[in-house]
Image (cartoon, rainbow, N blue to C red):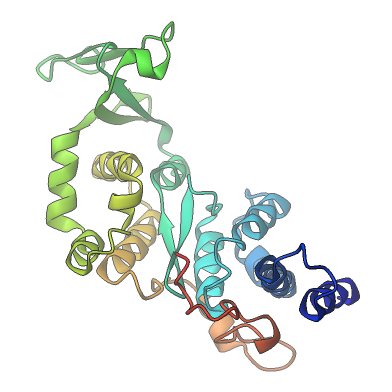
Length: 299
């Protein structure tokens, strides 16, 4: 901390005119956030399933703190604890922590759903892929499985040379037999977005265009395809809870999802002794936006 104080003192005293003050303010925020995360590491590590590497999960969490510096500690705590509860790293592939103003919000991604499907003992494997314009493929639903579908990507070509993505598909092998193949084209994905996504509709009404459907359409297209697959694979309690958390996010993207389970509830119940509740804001000495900008203005 002494090194940090020296840097802040040097910047505010004008000793080095070459260094702008904003990066120093950001550094103070980041250091405070990382220290906060280190103090609360036990909460997240204790919630992780046994198969998840603790050190790697925390390394990914630390890497995300830069993007979440304008979010409240309480919302970061809730979002990270949700990631830990489901054993999904917040790497943007399995799960994402999305800042909406000053609220950090947990959202599972399509690889996270696939990960949870894999955990069911009857599921041998789960497959997802894109079909591009020049790929070889065929789907004949009247043929018996697995002869009803094949896809041969043009691996001799780059993605650009293979053409635009035209279809997303997913299937699983369950007890040695292949499931139904779920195929979704762009038009179907857009109809799902327009009909079911409250976050998308809210962003459109407010002209913010910051919902996941706006910022990462392909990821949501893939997720929609995988979500349809979950109807034909064995559903665990864990998968059902993840879907509920996802629904909570889409119902109101300004509020953290409700996560069921004793591990999550424990943090709210055992607040006595030396345990620490998540605070509503960072310390004023390192408050995000202390350069005069409102929280969330940089999103």
